[in-house]
Image (cartoon, rainbow over all chains, first blue to last red; front, side):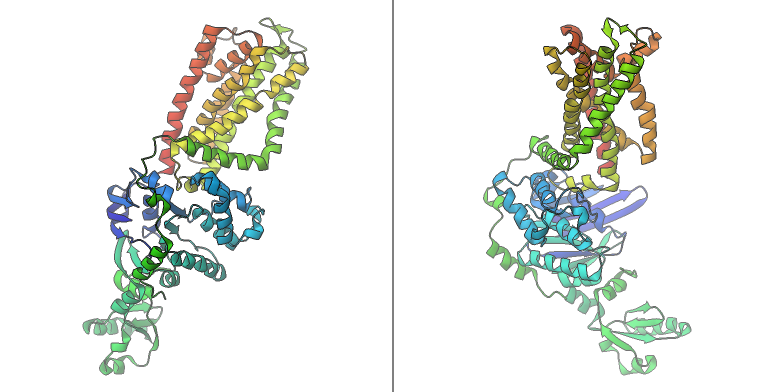
Length: 297
Length: 284
């Protein structure tokens, strides 16, 4: 999958502002950014449900939107909205999408059985969707997008709004996809999700991809191994920021604390001035804040 | 935190083997319009119908029967005959057209809006190899089929009250299908025109009600002012009413071909408008 110079405008608002992105076969690429960063718009352009004002898109070798139908036939899409048919049973929901994805008649029953197994809903196959729990519904939604065994899957905020336990259930499902060699492009605004599931992450802010790489490497490059949070009186924060920036350190404000990236490299002279801080492991959010000045969640 | 690399995944990829689609070699580009996509849309409708056939059938059959009984016996006792037909014959055929209109246009307007705006059903379907023209055609075909089948129920009831069956009545389901297709497309188009669901009242009261009243369903239009008669000529339901009456009481080949032609023009126009407007709403 490749996107080159993608621009999408809604009137005066530029939702996607020159995105370049390649997704190599077999990887899970996390598209991480806050709400409004342009992630969902980018995902919609890959299925031609949103049309770029500039740039070129190729999905599975097909130019989009010109030949998007061929691309859509071979990729699976799990959208943010739960748009399951509530009147239908679990099995019927999968069967309908097996038809929509043109699974040959002889393979449909097996495709539905595989979807039921993937969603771990085999024993609920005849239950109407309206009676399923939130986690079951989301598992079914994902399995529905995979009923034709696509090699490329788009997951748009797959766990948004779910409680932590259900989110972890879905992580298992996505991990399974990864182990099967399915290429996944997953948008999320959950740091932990991107870190745990992605081989690489692309950080998006204000319609642009600001950085991309393996999560651990991005963290090491931009935030070091340790972030140390120093409680400081508000009046002194600005002065300390100036001092730290002068010596090449990156900082961010976390409530009343001043957080210093790559704190493992703080010289004693600065430590004497800052006092004792609370060390913690650096995260992708530190990277994101460092690069964009914005928070993700 | 993930430490897997893309090369790890590439190894798994090799173990899994190539995509069957890749093995098959390059596939020809899909046609501009694919019946397979329409069939898939219809499959979903059929699955839903299997859950809702009872209330669907009840509403589609009972409503026209009530109209038939109320007008047929109520008004029929005051009105002797119209244009050479007994009132029950006149209204029995008229209500077929009304029934077709209601069965196709109301769900097209309301259900399509709900599925598009609240349920995001179409967003899901358009992420599969289904294009908007196929989606619209599939939805309208389903409603047209229901209209063609259920639209016959007033005719059957009217037979119980004295309408004589004729061989040419076999055309009625076809007339109902073509009319239902057009009005379903009109409903889909309108559902994509209105900015909020509150605006449906404008469509129902401002479009659908006049359509079914100025069509010669309940009363002949011969004595109305000429401008009403001109309006009737551009009202597709008027042509349906004429076709159903001729199917019941005697085919008029040339005239009926013109009526059918008018309906087909309506269908083509509505198809274009429905596809255009749905694309504006569903693709940004």
